[in-house]
Amino acid sequence: MEAAAGAHFSGLLPSSPSSPSSADVDSSMQHFVIGVSGGTASGKTTVCDRIIQQLHDHRVVLVSQDSFYRGLTAEESERAHDYNFDHPDAFDTEQLLECMGKLKAGQSVNVPIYDFKSHKRCSDSFRKVNASDVIILEGILVFHDQRVRDLMDMKIFVDADADVRLTRRIRRDTVERGRDIDSVLEQDLIHYVGYVKYGRFVKPAFDDFVLPSKKYADVIIPRGGENHVAIDLIVQHIRTKLCQHDLCKTYPNVYVIQSTLQIRGMHTLIRDRDVTISDFVFYSDRLIRLVVEHGLGHLPFTEKQIVTPTGSVYMGVDFCKKLCGVSVVRSGESMENALRACCKGIKIGKILIHRDGDNGKQLIYHKLPNDIAERHVLLLDPVLATGNSVYQAIELLIQRGVPENRIIFLNLISAPEGIHRVCKRFPSIKIVTSEIDVALNEDFRVIPGLGEFGDRYFGTDDLLSQRFMAAV
Image (tube, rainbow, N blue to C red; front, side, top):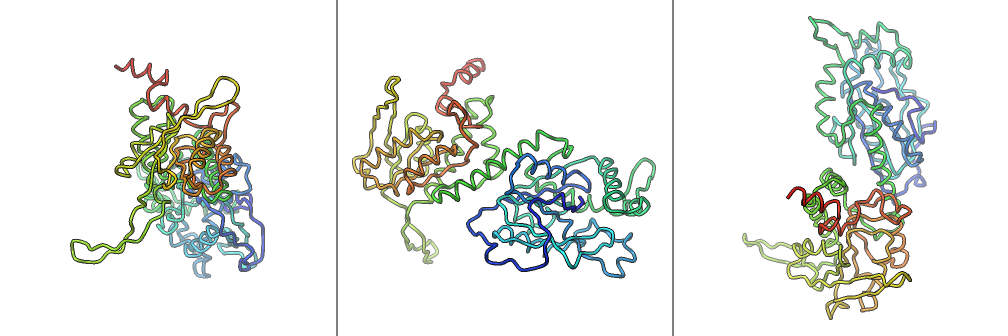
């Protein structure tokens, strides 16, 4: 277990025990919970601290499972050297669940303070943890209980060599927790049988409870806090999530599909500059299909009662019939097949926005269904950067009689600048995306982005084309 020292908490203030007031509640906040687990003294707290230091963001708070140790009874205290502090029963998981549930609900909570010398909780003081956009929960057994795991949006396992962990634990428990070396060695009691090491409590608990929970991790960090590459990647992901949360709170019509390992993996592949054309197309199509399915869920439905083959009555819904797709040529055409696969026989129109010389003027060509004003429109363009092209396309649709609230814009990645531009001008439009990136660079390209989508998808990117021809 890592020390639950005050320096390891972000946004914590000492306070007296009290119930959170209604003023502490912010139900509009979306909270991203990260679980960090690993063996004792593996470097979990170091990893968490470095993540927080890199973020430089007051909206991140760290909570340690160590704060939720059960206080020992008088009888247990007399034999503390025989007590297994690495067993799940050593923690008050119910109180941990209660505190984390309140934090996710936007409430401030009072976290207990545990005294590692007396093995008891401080009865007259707590640490107040304020509600935050990102909540990091660290501890050796935070993955053990499924109820705790289910609270997490991202799970990190910090891996370290057993000998390194033992050395760190002895140094930590003697220096930080005021215990003598004999009691530390008694708890960790390393016996040598030939050249094989056995631990009295720590190693069996690690093998029985901590190591099996490694399979639940989304990210495994070897070498702990020394692994700067892994920490940088995690920080980048958290920054993206913070950006998404901000924009979704500012613009309630912006929807980001729920991130999973599959989605994260597909984004990794299509963003990789060295990916093959076939893989880029395959995984782009998968992501586009997910975005289209999510977008269809925002269309109006009507209730419909049917009779099943068993003769039972089923109350379901009927799809919206007046629907069409409109792709922004040419990259938007890459999304048409996914739309056709989801909506049989759907009509699809096209809008081409072309720059006319160097004077900044644009020519717009279009071919749209004659009755488009009567339809709900799914506007297709995989990348939202500055928002200029989409802005022009939406203006055209509105001129053709399409109500603003009947337009749903579907894309793979969005830049915050583009979302601001579109949503401020067209507040009733819905935007559905799979990820919001960090920003635009000085060349107005999305960062980290994925390059020129149309060129990469249709094989007209010079680098990809050269690699394809070399393979042939």
